[in-house]
Length: 227
Ligand SMILES: C[S@@+](CC[C@H](N)C(=O)[O-])C[C@H]1O[C@@H](n2cnc3c(N)ncnc32)[C@H](O)[C@@H]1O
Image (cartoon, rainbow, N blue to C red):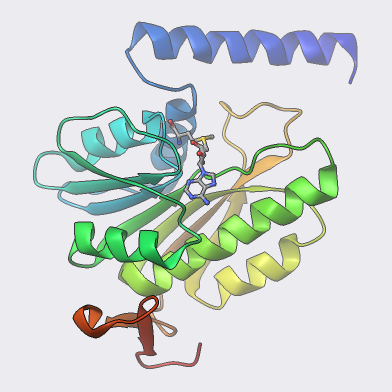
């Protein structure tokens, strides 16, 4: 990257970092979600939101503020999330059935919006990081199949790479509207982009089947579609 571009990028990073501190947001990432919402109209007052990869909680703060007191927000992360008023948190790995079950228990209904800012630990090997990111995205899409209401929305981060077309195909088969977007608050040099999807078709929805009788993980039954 040219020296000037790096300088511009670092200034931008610093700008959002300072702004987050000043406005008491837990992360710079909060501005990415605000910018995505301002552009694509993700939240409505009273919405129910599931946020995957939510720690330290910047997105949770934005979602909570935008859905208001009548809305509900649940955050999931491998890491502890400091308590946040009006937000329920689940600590665990979303790729594990047990975490999915606890999320469904905490949620107890359908979501209007699923968010995922999940990122793998960056190993520095580009194609491995990309593959891990896509794997997390596929799990986020799986969460949509379980909790998202028909017409609902998804915003998820992905590190770009050659598996993008197949990921987008999965998303496009489930949503009426799909865009790939990079908000201003994202670093220019970063390979991260956000998939913004609206109009969930609910064609591949699955429901948790009789959790009480469950043995060795939850069972999901197809509801109006093949999975
Ligand atoms: C970029 S941070 C999220 C920042 C957050 N959106 C915010 O505004 O504060 C990515 C998070 O994804 C979480 N994560 C990665 N893999 C995960 C998984 N399998 N299950 C749950 N969380 C995961 C990480 O622990 C990390 O906290």
